[in-house]
Image (cartoon, rainbow, N blue to C red; front, side, top):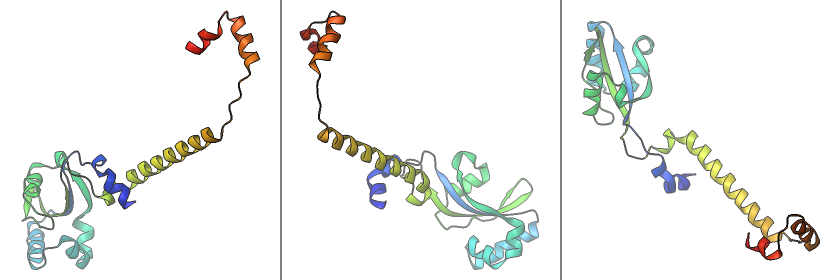
Length: 171
């Protein structure tokens, strides 16, 4: 499967940049400050979430890919300037406070990683394997086929349709 992907990865290009983001959001400035202090000690949102399950249940948004066109201005501005694994400073947006961690980035025009297109890739690979199997079967059948021509039936058909033998061959 990996070798098929390597040969065909140009068929799996990211059309628009997509950011895989760990996102903590809070309504309270005090909570946001506390979270910020914790993240400065250990700048990994996912570890922070694992260590504070109660906070995670209240404030952590599910990790997901977000297309660049869907990012609100303050988030997009921060994420565009971050490297993978960076954690943003506190972002205030719509009366809430946010911390973002860029977990992965698929840039527009680059091949998507296999893990991100695995289901589509499996279907494409299965389709190609079926197509090859059908082509092989047809070739085998052609090699084994014995073609028998019934000239009497052909002559009867030609005479009914007023066609000469040379016309049939030319058509």
